[in-house]
Image (cartoon, rainbow, N blue to C red; front, side, top):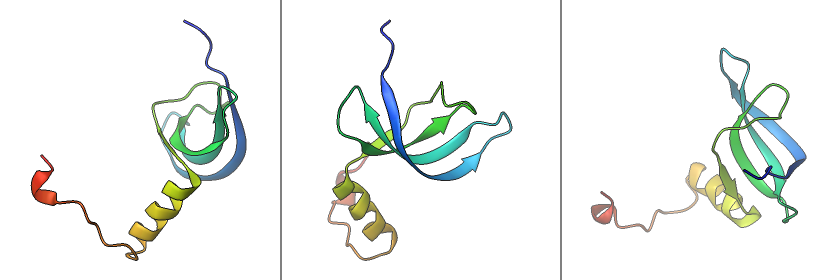
Length: 82
């Protein structure tokens, strides 16, 4: 399997740490020479290994912030979510 190329461009903050020392972090990460995106995932203490995570554009992160602050109404029809 080919090596995954990534660069943590900006460390934003640590959300939590587990008993094995892995930390769930918010970072800006460039994956495979693409523009950096906000990224939430668990990282090993030396940042050489990572778990699956979520990447967000600047716009998606801003929308998430607005949702968490109660500034945006959810327009998804919950009856369709199963």
